[in-house]
Image (cartoon, rainbow, N blue to C red; front, side, top):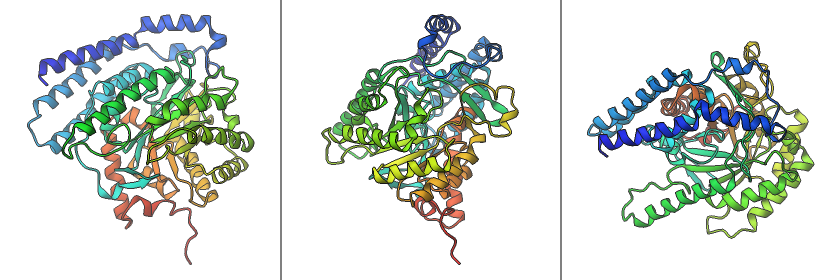
Length: 470
């Protein structure tokens, strides 16, 4: 691709992203939301003072961000004749210059810009193979590494290829609701930068199943054409979205009176494109959703969703595994109930955990700590890892667990694995650290495994939960 073509494509992408998140459009959206506040999704908005605490995107910040990303891409094009591995490393390293500039922008606008960049290929693409020690098989699917991107970043499946290309072992899109909904009024995302944390009350903002199904269907068709037309082994074998594994996270509409019907609709529309499915019953921003974690409610929901999945026609590889995502704010009795349902209903896995409504120290002292919503990031690590360890013990290590919450380093990912996680997800750390974080976490995790004498991720799963030998 010529430099002029790259520049032209970048200008179109940036202009599109800026218009989608511009103050004018945001203002129009806000007025619409104000007129329909009784029908808005999710929890109530926080203090009115939040409006003044989150400034609109600055023109300087927008220009700086666009300029730095443009320079990064131009540098990559200029050095395209260099050694591929070296160039790849330089491109990831260069994002460390760009990422801090996103802090100059409103949090949700910065997120929108990041998704647009990934969707249009303006992010580094990992060309280097993962360390062999990180590879593992789960649910009959081959993961080149256990580090994944949690749901919430790419809610509408706009950037699957670009995100998998960053080097994640798997990417989870969503949560996707049956009908489109705008979510809660803005501002609804708040940075607690000093603590590496974020509070959000988005409320399942989603373009809906129809739009997401079209996107995933197009990607699936493209992948199949590449496999058919390729007469060599140039196309890496991976999941249904191409190299890497794709998870689809399903949610319910706020106004829906039948949660099970919403999840069943998601199964029927999206499961054919997913390497695994997630039933999200733990977001704190949709009223009544967490009540579905009770033993009776969960058992009935899982039964209906299983039936919906199994009644569909499947090829030889069978239906996608079904997982449930739970909250960290659960009592011991709640965890015992969920473990019992997971075992009796033969759930394929659990994701532990979603965001917390608690404000663990030191985040509790932050001026924004009183904002309504779920907290993610570093302060969530200890509580989510504790729940992870308890669930591993309650299920006897027989149910694959995905550890999520507060992972910022390879050492954190390693602790999750030792506490029972077969796979690990992150999201908030990516918002603060950018793409350069991904190869660094993988390298650190490989070092941790080799340091302690483990030859694979599997060998390390749950070792801190098992009784010590005398």
